[in-house]
Image (cartoon, rainbow, N blue to C red):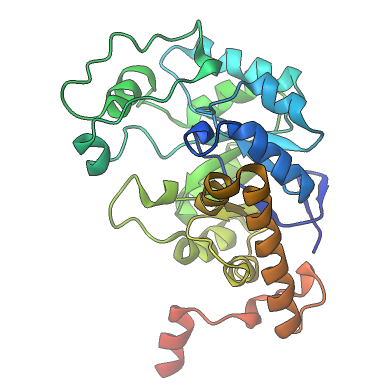
Length: 304
């Protein structure tokens, strides 16, 4: 089931998506997740809002890892995080581009969501003066620290300060995918932020094929969102994804049984993908072709 991404051979096309604050699920946090991913030969994308320090995760096991980045109003903070990721062997930067403002997360507003302590920002930001008496502290933190004016110029800025390949996360249209290729990124990730940003944003599996056609093979396309079974992975690969990222299921496993639980989730997804491939007559990832799946659009066109 091997594939290749950014020149790195990957025994599995299943990756761990960037999700924050893993210590809310297990005391070992992202260290446990990183070990689970490494044991399953899965590439992990470490969230910028990790509960564990970049250095701690990097030292926990030997594996290929990418680092997720948000652009702060204070660019020095973003650059500091990049330098730390570079120095500890992270292989790529995943720039999240779908959060100029935080989506209206009503549960967070009702429970006055606080910002889980982020040791990576220690000495760079202070959360002490954020008012928690009304609404979500997470929303206030995002509004006051992250840059809402993010534009294509920031991709150029990021390329100017780092030699690491850049993948843009949060692309759901062919137009933006083409712009991303023109900007010189190394890959795009079709993502709607776990459906937590914009209500009625397209499901990523529905947006995937448009993005794949738009980039026309110039860069690899990844996808996340709604992946719960190995058959979901197969569908995404058939529609042109190079790799598939999984977020919530890994956290469920981490919460249930720590490192062993996260590993079990990844093993289960890989096993389900192997079974689905066998039952679809696919001997390798290359054999998972477009004709193995039928989309709703295909079905409608067949009726015309």
